[in-house]
Amino acid sequence: MTPDQPELDIGDLRRDEVACAVALWTAAGLTRPWNDPMADIELALATPNSTVLAGRAGGALVATAMVGSDGHRGWVYYLAVTDACRGQGFGTAMMAACERWLTARGVPKLHLLVRRDNTRVIEFYGRLGFEVSDSVMLTRWLTAPAAPPAATP
Image (cartoon, rainbow, N blue to C red):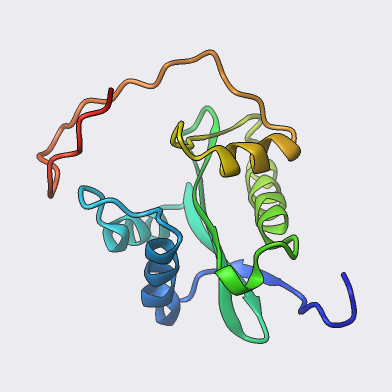
């Protein structure tokens, strides 16, 4: 960290930061019409197997990551850093915090999903040691989505 670079303080997302987190996710292009980010936050904060981590610099929310465990493996969603703070190592710090959160709960493996066309983010995770999996993700809606997802090729 350079002297002019702010320190990132990481902790649980506070209730008064929920709207800021949703705005960050929206600005980062992480939200979709069929996923309600407020409902995602509420579910993550309401269960002991998940949380939303907040990265703060100078007291302001500048990074987030939703982390949780399905009882078999860990998952990370909504990793986002404000445009003004990108390139300062905050994304790496947030992923390290997610790994610590999962390790403290005895979770041995971490998975995450990235849209195939998001090559910049795939490269970021590759630099952190993540590998592209041979698994294929399949989806089935159990409730009707808010808006129909676009067809994928």
